[in-house]
Image 1 (cartoon, rainbow, N blue to C red):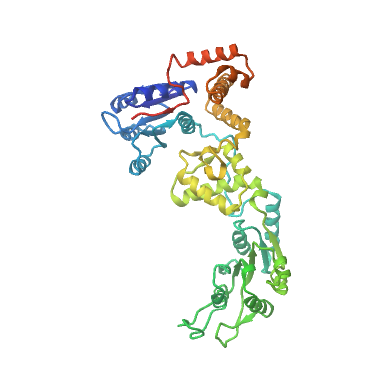
Image 2: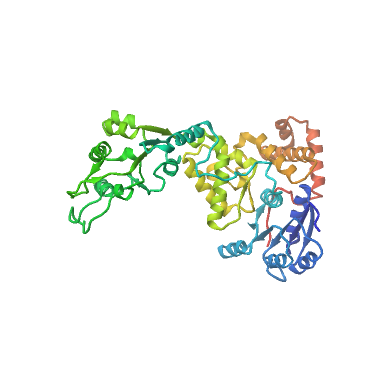
Length: 477
């Protein structure tokens, strides 16, 4: 059996064991310490903790061998590996063994506490429901509901459609769904990005060419219009199409027939055209770089996709779906989003839109430890330092997130521990600012000198006559 708050620490360095034990106890955990793998193996025969922190280099065996013992005993608990001799091979070996996370020494105790709390947090994610599944096109926002309604209205038609929206907003997904819910659904869906193909080759790509039509044309080539016969042709980034080719495309749309490059046989176009662009075609028309008559041919029905930052209510739905899909695709454990992580995602600007969110979910599915994704798992370069803090001015939100994590972990006395930690941090900041001068520090804090002295004495008593402060960097072997 296991106690709700048991954490085991395995390290042959007495100082490391002491510092970790003190820090964990301050967080409300019961802690047991061991020096060797043998001691842990013996203890595991009778009991087990909620999480285990182990050094890799121990006197009698490799600390990672504890993972094998846990598997043999069918004990499923997170293991955090610690080492002062970190290298790539060792890190890879640790994760291949199945450790929850890997902690190189020297480490910061706040980092250790955060890692432990993530490892043992219950699977309950704050009653945030999982997405039940469904189509690839997801969203509850009013803008997406209007997109759904438009697709529904077009389900009996094969009329031309123009889809607009920022890069990464999901224009091709909408085009595919349009095709799948159309009378041509049994036919092919052929996509071409007109911006990705050199202008001198784009005509051949679209309409095909005959053998000998130009240098390098060694055989006949079927174009995308022929490939899409009976189905749909998706012209992505239509705004980048050269003017000369716009004229030829307009003829195909108006008359319904075309020639291959260098060909004499008139071919019938039998493809529904769905076009998309991230550009403002009206501005390009005014600038003379896009034909107005072609615009009207393409824009029979217009679907405008909003950027992700304008449909924040869809972010959690999309992220959960992506995490499920990526986990299945890569054969990995499915990850869950913590409520505070969802909040962080919803406050981000998403310049890359849905595509950027998908790529982030791929990264998190591979890199985030455990089956839950916390704000600190989000990339620092996008979401700021520590990610749990949305900037230095948002410390009340960080405090709220800490409180929710503590309550989720079943711990109590939150107010007392928070007040004590607040006083300690601010006093140390003031003393650092004044170079240790207590009178000036007391003035900065708005305290009397005697009051500050009493608080310092209390902190010193807690450190037990020179014990290392719990926020210092821990080192060792």
